[in-house]
Structures are given as structure tokens and as C-alpha cells.
Length: 343
Image (cartoon, rainbow, N blue to C red; front, side, top):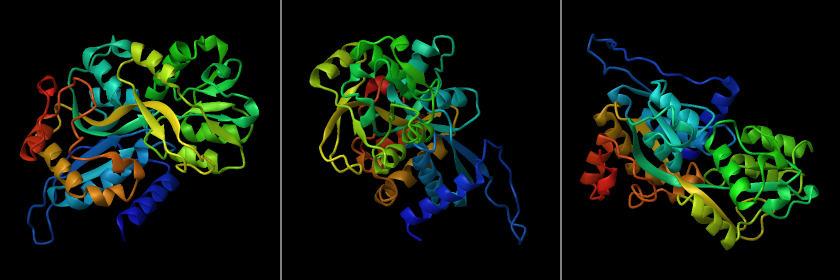
């Protein structure tokens, strides 16, 4: 079974089960002949909602590591979550081993800024850069919303409470659209729930941030509900960049979604695979070896991974240190790590 088919099968099976393996301990067993097997290493990677990009990619990585590192006792599983903020908190609390998070929120956690003022996580470490989490403001055509400021007076899903998407939605609505959150009928739904609500006529729009294509966005564009994606002008970007310089400009290509015929200019933030500094350095090293040695294979399983390259693996992030195991890997591969991203 090829990577793409195998990963789809696993995703469907996990969704049908409706539960995910949580963090566990290590154990050791003996083979039939009494020989000692490798100590079992349970690894949980926390991701995001099932309608986004983090969860399916987390499942792809877990599948890869189980196949390539099973001889080391690795037993990896992906766990859905509320997204970046929850993932950072779970790593800090020892409830997960790896996570996917937006680079700016990882910096906030590391420095104790913004919503992490009372919950600083100095032990967070980057493992590798991933894809840009592209901001996608999708609205129903029946809502009459054509610009960001038109969202006033309409129902709009800003993302799950405490998520990175919620943070981005709020700062864009306030700083770029010039709205107070009191001007908007704000909802806090996951991407899949928001897509369903839009199709049912109960919601006018949503922000779905993630690597593209994002499954919930694919779903709403392929539905019978007529929708459009809002454009971010150069002026919108400059306004946002002035208050949040970690945002970059990105383009959603025409044809990415059913009915999206032309390119749409938007914004986004780089995402990253993260870990606690306490995670075993040899394990992190071996995971990166497996990931980059099989990069072309996993890129076939999800299009968002096609923007991941070894050359870009330490770029576009924020001044948060890389994990010791990651530093060893990159040094062996000839990738230079900025001095402000070393422990």
C-alpha cells in the first residue's frame, strides 16, 4: 500500500474510532526466544482539529515514525486538539511529546508574552519548520461580505477558543478591518463544525488557517453553498505587519479549491514541529532522519508538506532555540542554524 492510501486508511480508521492514544510510559518485553526487545517509546504528537491541516499531517508523521523507527521501539500517535495554544500548554504540562504550532505563538510561549504572560514555557524547542499557516477568510456569497470590514454585523467563526486561529482572527478584525469584536457575532467552532454551519445557513463566514489545501475549506467550496475567499490588499498587509511583523504575504492559487478560479492574496505565519527540551535528543534526531529521508513519500500524502524542504527547515520562524537533537541533525546535513536559535 502506498503512502497516500495507507495514510487515508489510517485517518478514516481513527475518525471512526473517535479516540486517540494519549501519552504513555515506556515498557520492555521479551521475544519468543527470550531475547530483549527495544524499550517501547510511546510518542504523542498533538495537532489540531480534524478539519484542519495539523491533524492529518500529524497522523502522516506518526505513521512514518512507526514504520521507520519501530525497531527502536517507537510507538507514535497523533492526537487532535484545539491547536497551537493548547499544544504548547500540553507540552509544558508533560501531556504530549511533540506538537505542531504557529511560530509566533511559540515565541510568545518561550518569552512569556501575550496570552502566555502567566504561563511561560522556556523549555519549548523547535524541531523543524513546516508550511505557512495561510489565513483563509471564507464567507458565503449570500452574506454580501466582500471586504474585511463588511464582516461587521455578521456571524463569523474566529476559531476554537484559545487557538492560534482565534488570535489571528481577532488581530485582523481589530487592526486591519477596524472592527471591535462587539461589532461581530463571534463564534468559536472547529473548522469542520464551521463549514457545516455555513452550509446550513447558520454562519456567514470563518477563518480557517492552515497549510493549503485545508480540508474544511475544500469541503465548503465543494458544497452547494456559494462562497468566496476574501482578499488581503497590500495596504491590509502593511497594516497587519506594522503590529504583527511575523505575518507574511501568501497567495492561494486559483484552482486550489473547487470554484476558486483566480489567485487570492492573503497572509499567514510559518508553522513548526515543536518539542520540549526534555525529549530525548537521540529520538528527535532519528525522527528528523526518517522525515527528511522519506520527504518525497510523505509529500505525496498531503499537499501542505510539499512546501517543506531541508533547505527551508530552519527559516522563517522566530528566535526560539532548536532542540539539541535537531541541531545535531542539521549540522550533519550542512544546514546553518542562526545563533539566536541555539540554546
